[in-house]
Image 1 (cartoon, rainbow, N blue to C red):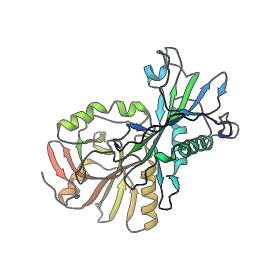
Image 2 (cartoon, one colour):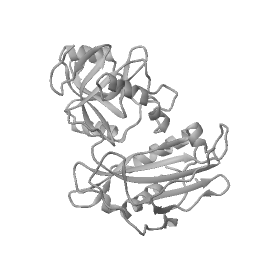
Image 3 (tube, rainbow, N blue to C red):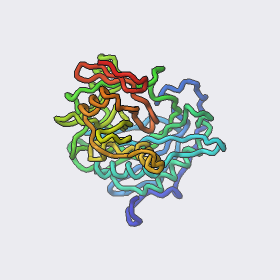
Image 4 (cartoon, one colour):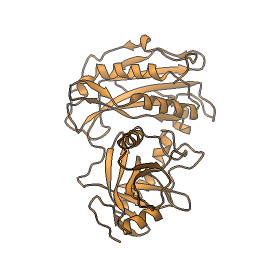
Length: 341
């Protein structure tokens, strides 16, 4: 959290301008296409500091064509969800973890610091205002997208003197449009999502935009997502936009839930952290953050030691992995308990 001495906006200064015309609610829940009535904006400049937070009707942004977020990718975002509980109360899932991660990403991007608690309170007020958009459903929710961009109106690589933090909300259903029991992944070491010393542990747009070419090549191979590999030993890192988990009998004959460690190449997912904390609390099997390679996975599949493989994330929640294409081989993970080469 930003220290008490860190200049920041205050939720107590929040200005609210309600929309005079509310949108009709849609039954179409394609991910990221149906937005609520209002948004939150907070402007910053090096001279004037943080301005008062503003909740206003959802609308387009006006940016200078030289804006450095457009030219040099000085921007980041977060993702969390609002749900209706069984008691009909609105809830956010561990939102301070998202606020902390956003602050870490902002530091890496040379964007200004802010008080995470103050931002969370502003977001809470935004969700409260648009709460009628939150579905009473186990399969849908409102996705919250905080975004932080440089609005520096000049060319040249330099620390921004102007920035905009804004938050939009959208009503969402399932992230993946598929009726299959699990996802299919394409694993090819010629593409790398992140590397040590890079920004793989930050939620920056550049980490995602550069993955599109590999994503569409995966589709050409009949797969839905990319299983990202790293290094000469083809370490398993992430799957699409998800953290990856392997539930198996390891080389020592132990029942284990394993996921790659946070070494700078892995996004520290909130769902990932929650899975690790819950399963460690259960104490039913070994839970490990360790490096996993494709050779280890292939060997375990052939020896029928893999119990399950799945991805996790805010958007996708928990998603089973059904099959993987790797070096021309087509192997099914035990979502259907078979292995084919």
